[in-house]
Image (cartoon, rainbow, N blue to C red):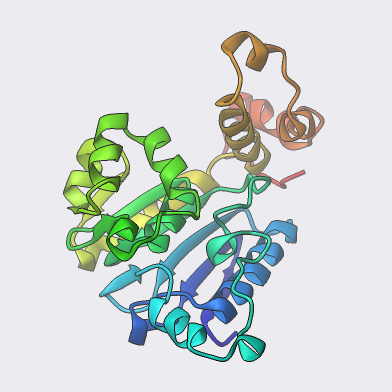
Length: 263
């Protein structure tokens, strides 16, 4: 990996964008590389959870590498590579709608534009106190096209989202916590410990139960409550037939910690 670091520790995948010289902004090759990482994470049954972050303490990701984009645009038309997102979207993640393993965003600094869109695509956001968020694309003649214009209004009150999206204003990690987009805010020195606590708590749960919960919640958002009540979800069907569905009640009755197998 040239533009990110992909580490597997037990059941946890750690994905780190390694372009600190450009505040972990992503260009075409980095997007393609991250798409491969998320493909591997999705396919590896021994990986139950992922943590996404950026290298250093300045930026989670400043989003699209606009300088690289500008340089590409100056090339002759016949030499100019076509700029497209990989199948998983920006960072290989924003358009990945079938990944029901939980992902934690460890936001260690600026999360702007596509960087914020990556965080919005995660399930939990843990942020350092100095982190800043925002969708400044309109100030560049762009829009938050990696689904930021759609995810942000779904995750906070509409007027709050519109206020930030139509002005391109940044907001602090503390403000993110107040509006409900950030789960926890801690000093930078405590960021890893805070993320570890979230990881540990998720790992205490049966992995198939976690995936079923995420799938049911996310797909249910597009349904009425009666429709959701009647719907059949793939991971819930797997959970019901799993060994872990037997192990959980048995461990409770025997007053011991369950031994999850993920099957």
